[in-house]
Image 1: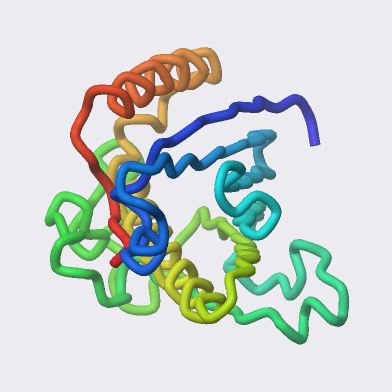
Image 2: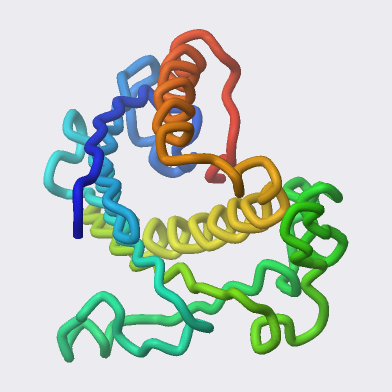
Length: 214
């Protein structure tokens, strides 16, 4: 798998948790999320926990494999037969899927974007069977939430939110290809460090951003 990077982030994220969870926690109480990430492209893993309140009762794990091809590999994550029975496959089409109104930006629309440096785009019609080169991002999301009366609702909410986030992120990723297609690995590592510092500062002093769970 090669060398990778490990990061640990701590969020004080009361405002970004679902209302049904915030309502169970006393006002002013600290809601802390720990995010651990391993980046060893083409494999990445992120684990999010809430060690202060839920401890072992909550864990969100996202594993990602980037593979060449058009998304037709049946079991990239080597799931067991029991896990395969529970798995729900959701195919995200960044060009043709419906987009939340608040997530839409014309400059991030693959139906309208054409790369000046690569000639790729716009992604019209059955683009997945026609474009070259092509790869697929396989994401496995596992969410364990053990809180009586809320388990099913929370699991459904989190899965819905992450599908939305994945769609929005990869639309943006495709439509900004000209900004990163010529970067070297050293350039990428430098940008990662700069972004890390910027995000840490924003978590302390900046305004809340991103997708909020309701």
